[in-house]
Length: 302
Length: 316
Image (cartoon, each protein chain N blue to C red):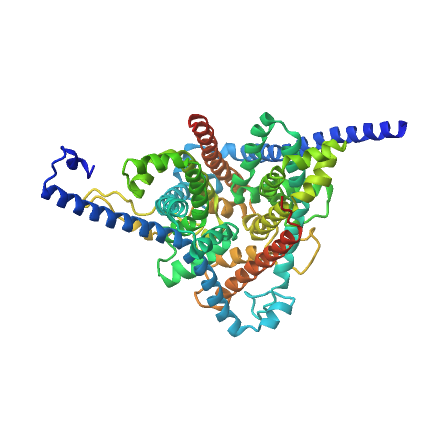
């Protein structure tokens, strides 16, 4: 009898210990994130000045800045968002609302699941062979934006499908009962209701794209760019220009990589400052996404 | 909108019927066009896959015209950029395998523990707070993790292991491991949550503790889902690029010792891409052969994972 009691007590004790181990393991993520941010901040804070954002890279670490990098990131993201968001939402809506149940649909679904597991650098290789050389788009902002768009397409599609699926069938039936066509139902009812979830997915996908480095290095992004792409807005008619699409470019993470891989410690300070800017951007985007998810989940009750 | 003018009383003129009919036809055509455009967007994902496979095979084919497959798989030297180039992929493969092994050594135990904790121990409030923070780990740009590995983890490890070189696979692997924890833990947690409650209750009724239930009942029941989490973690670790390119060194090195530096397949691709190689040269083609090897490794592992899942699948 005593034996059993001992055993029960021992098991209970172990159960309690495991609860603590589990909590600590879960905290590992938080600890690493804190260490990461503190490390970047202590090293990089001294370099964060307005001059850092308005200077081109330079041989002298104290004068180097991220002007061409952040401008490049903005241009590339513009191309990525304009391509991936409409395509991803359209594909997601099609698969959820329109697609007939046949082998082609099944193939597309399996394919999207598999694409999400393909290493990002492989997308870079594909873009190098296809966009840069076969389609002759060159090592340009356009190639880079399209590459990242393909990379985040599965994320946008999956997010769209999940939130479209959450719209109850009664909404659609009500619209059909009033004589709306399929597209009218989708446009006026299904999409507005699922916008919260889609937006969350889009923001997360774009934050992923901002931090991507490897595929852009593969397609031949330069690491030293001391000029800006052609301005998209012009003073004379037709006021808008697309020359910038063909411009060589660099982006923030590539600039950071370039500074990290130099042996001089002064450049590592610049890398830390650039990393801090990147972290603030991605964490802010993820924060917004989490807030959206929280708010939309609260507001809509079926 | 289009049907408004039909509703003015019961007397509908011939013209109104006519215009209603044309509106209907136009609408139908519009619906079809929209549907077709959306179908094309969905189909684009298949085009991407075909593009990836096609380009990798095409450029690798050109590569293997110059280099025999046997040399590629058995030679122990990878010196493509040297005067007397040797094309043995083995050193890059070992670099990739060692860093991934270190990463899995970190991520699997931690990820599984976290999954058990979140699904069986934590109450709702704790979970709502901890999960988003954990998932932020996968949002951090990998180049930042590379910086962290090189300039924070390596010096930290060097204070314990004074002989550790500045570039080593150990710190890169550990950081990748931490990075992929969210992938492992959240899929495993979903799998464990999906185990029906009555199985859990059966175990508790037998007097098992939460830990015993989790390890001896839930883990085996959810194993097929947990295995896919592990396979995803491995795919991420193998394909990770920036951390190894920054912290593990750029020198191909045939070794299984994580305390040394070695280039991985991905780090090699980055290294070559940074230099300005002429399109069509063997070095240019070699990155596609390296990429193809990477794809084959993930594919093999995925097939293994699939067989494992099929073998251990539990159906309720």
